[in-house]
Length: 265
Image (cartoon, rainbow, N blue to C red; front, side):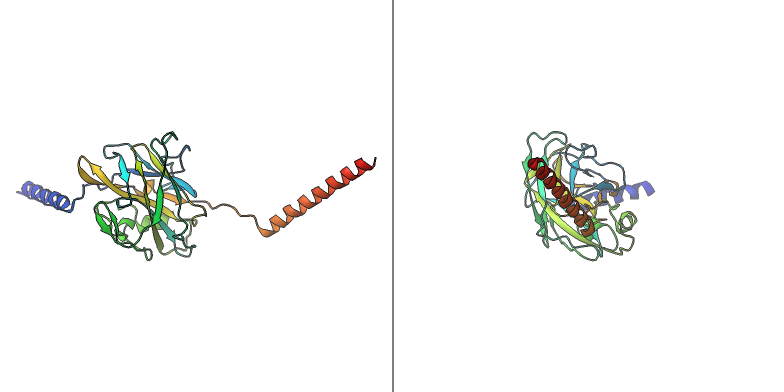
């Protein structure tokens, strides 16, 4: 009787997923954040999450789920950036440059993609989702954005607070960019470059949907395969710039005196 009840419960759960149009894809880890095309860590290196910089990639690992995904404006790849509170805002006008690589280790057949700041009720394969960019303080970032609950729950607030570089952060502001205009092949990647630095401690995650054996399937990443901005470009302090400028002036003066003595002889 107990086994019969379990089977009945499983059948009900499966029918609900089918009715909603979602595949049962709880922890697929299809997407990996890495350090960009042509680097040793394009598929991610250790770090839990992976340490990335202002230029990074989303890699589509080859497994049973990783078929090619054609990304369009109505079925984009979502780039989700969670910024610790107290950090500078990510301007929606500061859109990244996007390049699709069919093979992660070859530049042949690259495609320039597009990016746009996601708006409220952006439509993706399974329907619209609600976009909110403030007050991420509990649960998973995917649920915070009202995406499919089958997505990886390890991208949650508790893990984010353990990984962040800012120990004073008590919440995250979540920004979402729609990435489209190319195909995310199995073993391919999309490289993203921001023209200005992302705030230190920002955590990146990805999400999209595609068809696998004719069924809608989530493509997301586990927390261990997310990315974290671990360094920011060093900007010289004013005193350092002044010292460098003074040194150059002294060097230029010495050269002028040397040439002047040589010409007088």
